[in-house]
Length: 213
Image (cartoon, rainbow, N blue to C red):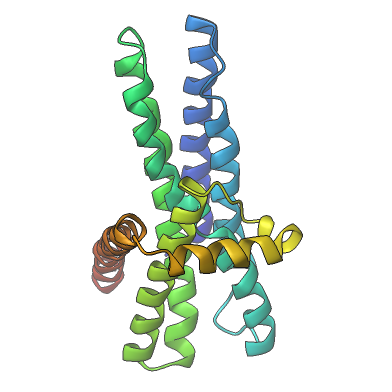
């Protein structure tokens, strides 16, 4: 996989999405969706970490430190998909434009996340068995889905892991001990299957193309 070429394409479509978001400001004079630009910036962080700093020859100790940092920010990428929940709040006159905008940003975030996960998988495959690396990827999807739940419904951010660690831990255990686990449980399960399914699809496409080349 040619990282430089893919990165250039991702930059181009990110700039395009931002342009459409800014254009919305010019057309309707509302700033309520400019937060998508910030969310997109956060989605780029795990991709940059995995593509520029994590290579197959990276030492295990150094990888472990980078991996922790990567894992804290990784949920921000697929998190963009959940912004489609705000479609219900859109004004009818803006609905078609805003819907496409949500899907555009969500698609870019998902791409950044899936490709970033692919970089991690490549490292794991070089140091673990195929089964262990696959289980690790599924576990990452599971943990990240819970992280997305914390961000979407509990309103926690990645940096709260550093500045509000104790409160975040208490809130997390509070959710796990809560008597009604239906919403978080269902969200985590469904989103885990969603991310993993998309990842496996992209993985097969990338691997098959590599075999043809």
